[in-house]
Image (cartoon, rainbow, N blue to C red; front, side, top):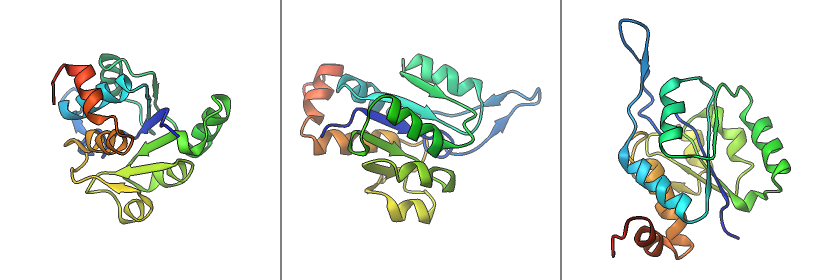
Length: 169
C-alpha cells in the first residue's frame, strides 16, 4: 500500500536540534534545502506532509508555508494522541503513514506508523524501532534520505524526480 502521509518531527530531524536565540530573543533555525527538495518530490508523488512538533516556532511555520506543506501542527504535547485521532479522522491505516523523528518524544507516535525512519544521530531507542536509519544527521538531509527510501522502495523515485524537477535522471 502506498504512503499517503509523511509525518515529520522538527528539532533534530528537519533541523540540527540546536535552539538559536539572538540577543533580542528571536529564534532562528537552520533547514536543509536538500530536505526541502525531498519534500517537493514527496508531494509530487502524492504524499501529504505533516509537521508535528512539541514546540512553537515562527521559523517552522514559515518553512512549512514556503514548502506548501498540508499540515503544520505545533505545540503538540501528545503526539501519539494527536496522530491517532488524525489517522482515524482521515481513515489512514498504519501502512499508509510514514514518520521521521529522532528522539524519545517521537517513539509512541512512531509505533502507529507502517514506516519509521530516523536521522543517523537519533536516540538509540528510536534507531531500534526504525525501519530505516538515514545516513544523514538531522538537519543535513535526513528527511530527504527517508523520502528517497520510500519512493525508491515504491519504484517511483526517478520518475518522481523527473516530474518534479525535469532532471532527466
